[in-house]
Structure formats: C-alpha cells, structure tokens
Image 1: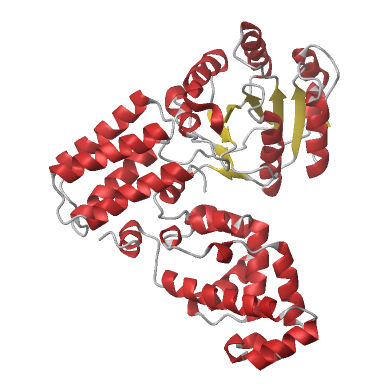
Image 2: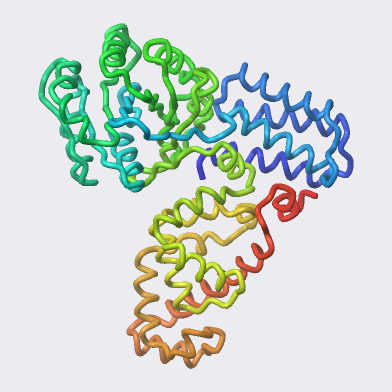
Length: 443
C-alpha cells in the first residue's frame, strides 16, 4: 500500500471517531491534531498541513449534519472531501485531440523519467493509440541506451541520436512525429537544480511547445519537493505531476503536495518497477484507499485489461452469490496475478483493508497457482464443482494422483474457504460513502 504509515495513522484517527461516545469540541480538536501529526510525519509541507486542517476544522464547526448521516459520518465525510480537494479534486483527463499530442517529461536525475516514459507509452498503447518515444537526454551517458531498451520491451519506436544538443535531436525527427498519436519526450535531469538545466528546459519547452509538461518527482524526496516543483514550474509551466516509487517505504507526502505548490494536478502515480505499474491518479479513489474505503474505479480499470466484459460479469455474479467452484477460483486468482499484487488489489476493495485478512491469503505465488492447477487435474468433476466434499481420504488420493504433498491440497481448500469468507464480508456493499462507513462500523 502506498503511504502505508500515513494510511495507518489516518485509519487510526477514523477508528478513534468510531469508538467515541460523543462528538464534541474535545473530539474535534483531537481529530485535527491527529490529522496534522499524520500529514507532517508523512512529509507534507507544514504550511499546507496548517491550511488543510484549518479548513477541516472550520467546516466541522460551521456546517450542520446532513439528513441521513450521523455526526460521526459527517466528520469523516468532511475529512475525506478536504483530503480529496487537497490532492486536486477531480481526476485529470488527458484528451488526445490533436496529432501528434506531445508530452515532455522533466525532473531531476534519478526521479524515474525514462522508466516513466515507457510506462506512459504503454498506458496510451492500451487505449489503441500509436506512440513514439524521443530521447533528449544528452548528458547522462546511458540515457539513450536505456530509452531504446524500454521502447524495445514494449514494441514502441524510439528516436535517438548521439548528439550533444537536445534541440538538434528534436529537429532531426520533426517529420516523423506526425505519424503518431502521442509523442513522449524524455529530457535530461541533473543531480540538483542548476542554471544550465533550467536554461535547457526553457529552450526545449519553447521549441517543442508540448501539449503537456509533466514533472516526474521521486516519492523519497521529502519536503525538497516544494523547491523543485516551484523551479520547474517557473521554467516550463508544469501541467501535471507524476510521483514515482510510491510502492516503496518513502513517506511521499512531499511529492504528493508538489501539486499544491504548482497548482498542477497529479496525473499518474508510479507504483512499481514493471511497465504496467502506472496508475491514472484519481484523488477520490486514492484518499479512499488511504482511509480504508477502497478504490473501485482503479480496480475495475485493472480488471478491464484482463477480463472481457462478459467474463467479468459471469464470474462476478458467481462470486457475489458465493457459488463459485475451484475452477472459477483458479481463473480469478490467475487473472488477479496479471492485474498486480494481491495486497495492492485488496486495498482497492471497499472495506477489505479494514478486515484483518491473513497475509498468506494475499500472497499467492506463481508456484502455488501452478501446483493448484496440477492438483485440479487429479480431481473429479464433483470435487471441482463442490470442494466441500473433499475429505481427508480424498485429499490423500488427489495428492497421490498429482504427485503433490497433501499439504498443498489442504492449502488450496483453505484458500477456497477464505475466498468464500471474504465474499460474505463484502456481500451487500454498494460502494457509496454512507454504506462504506457502516461497513467499517463507523456509524
């Protein structure tokens, strides 16, 4: 989970509200202090924290509790809405109308620009667009090689030249850009902000006139993010921010609050090293995950890349009814592995992160899936359709027939039962805020 410590602190704050008997000034003051402490420990700028928590406190004191919500729900709803507003409010939509749609990536050395260029290319390719990458980093010796390798891995054309002038390289391929829907430019970085870097970025910006200029910023940069964001924004008018390394142990609050400094929205977040580990940033879903309320939109987006609509609907109906078989479970687990880490996916399911799910239930390794497939080949049709009939003697028979250990078969049955238990916990949830809160026992 991204920002795990911040998330845990904020969830703890919500639990404090849930367990309180009265909603009074004392509770409100404690709530605001807890939020301030959590955000400051998460490396969010002190001035921004002060502004945010002042808004929360003012809204709590000046607004009446709406009909249909308890006071506790009203408090939590205000925290949720103000955190969403702090992170940009509505998701930023990139509409590729002109051709070529040009995106320039800027940032310091080590922020992950080149890797992000590949992830962005893959993102647009999935949407049926024709994409090209252009290498304009003339200072880092291996930059062009790295971009070429990234392009090769995702089968995207890469335009590079071993020249010393980035503008010359850009001009060399001007006629090629019109053949593509989206062209992504990977620019140079430095170890620190310098006059040379700012001058080069300004010149490239005026030459390219990109549709978007995204600041790629590392999650581990801390509060130095503010100075960086301001300097890059002054030199080339940042239109969006992409924090990277959000899957690590970094506090990341500084990178997230860079959007508040530049007035530019967070557009994507990098959540891993793989080329698919780039998520379009949805403030509502992101805050939902932080607070343990889930992010159904992100989950559905990942699911669409794996399932057809018909497959998803059919399997979804089976799971929600609790009627799925072992074969259905295997199909679901295989698809979920393609979607990413199971622990990350669980964070997206409303209410699930509040449940103390056993770690082993979330860490299904590829080896286990392969063993389960072999085990199923030694089962009868009846056993596959209704695993509850599998007794100890049947487990021994399946183990002997598949060449596996009996503990592997028991582990598969355990996974099946845990999945059914999870479905029962989730059943009936419709996803709106008030029902999510009731699911979390906050009402």
